[in-house]
Amino acid sequence: MPTLINGKATSEKIKTEIAQRVSEIKTEGGKIPHLAAILVGSDGASQTYVGAKVKSCEQVGFESTLVRLEETVSEEELLKVVEDINQNPDIDGLIVQLPLPKHISVVKVTDKIKPEKDVDGFTPANVGRMTLGWPAYVAATPYGIVELLKRYNIETSGKHCVVIGRSHIVGSPMSILMARNDNPGNCTVTLTHSRTKNLPEIAKTADILIVALGKPEFVSADMVKEGAVVIDVGIHRIEDASKKSGFRLIGDVKFDEVAAKASAITPVPGGVGPMTIASLLYNTLLAAEGKIYVK
Ligand code: NAP
Image 1: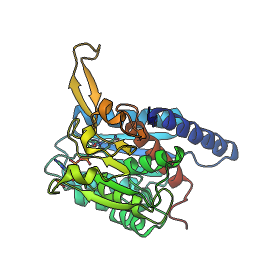
Image 2: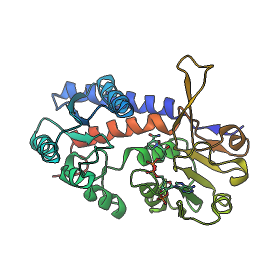
Image 3: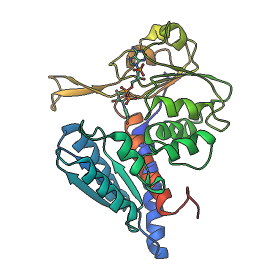
Image 4: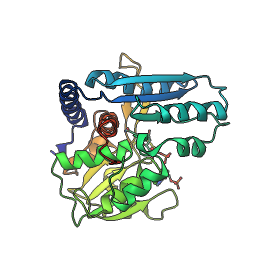
């Protein structure tokens, strides 16, 4: 049986560690971390994600502010809200839930966020700092994966890591983190995408396979090397009449058959997903304590 990399349990442990730090801050009379989230429109998935982030803030003792804006809000008005939060000394971290409506430029909005408050790690300043190996807010999902590899003592040095997917929020930063001279890191990395030829053959050479392409159960056992470590980032809801909710969650990996070959694997749900929120909270704690942009 492979090691089941339990992101749910690990994220709960991280949240407990953060909550402990918050109570120390309270005792010391310091500033309680404060996260602001901007949600534009009423997309169901976005509301669920933002709701979970706000709830987690409460769980660890952070303050949180949720700014809800109409779907029809103008780009100018949204930029003004971002700027107000940039200037608000009480707020340490700011996230703008994506996707944004089509009439709003994600580039302009991201670029407006003050790097010191960019706890999602999406601004050019933080992506650049991460790439240079400087202290940076690292995007929450890749950061959560690095933390899982670290806490499960998975050896990465000298290994071949294949990343499937090159999005700005998952695949690309993941490839940079796995290649950097650090632990976890020091991998030889192959970053693959929709134009990659012979993907199954390349995936099969991976000691560590990180799958983030957004296609349900894309990776089958014949694409995986015996003993590989498999990290499944994908999340998909599929109908399942046998469940009370009427659906169940699956990943980008065919879990049962791949688990039979892997040495370690993340499940869906309960793998990478819960780590994303834990990382966001951790970045917010770093922001409140001024640990990244040291004055
Ligand atoms: P995305 O922005 O849609 O990017 C998908 C990437 O996969 C693209 O680079 C695309 O290539 C590549 N791709 C698509 N089809 C491919 C194929 N057949 N072969 C090889 N590469 C292919 O996705 P994302 O935002 O990174 O998310 C990926 C998955 O992770 C989704 O299921 C998402 O829901 C999930 N996710 C989970 C979390 C979490 O907290 N667990 C967080 C974020 C995302 P091109 O660049 O060539 O188009």
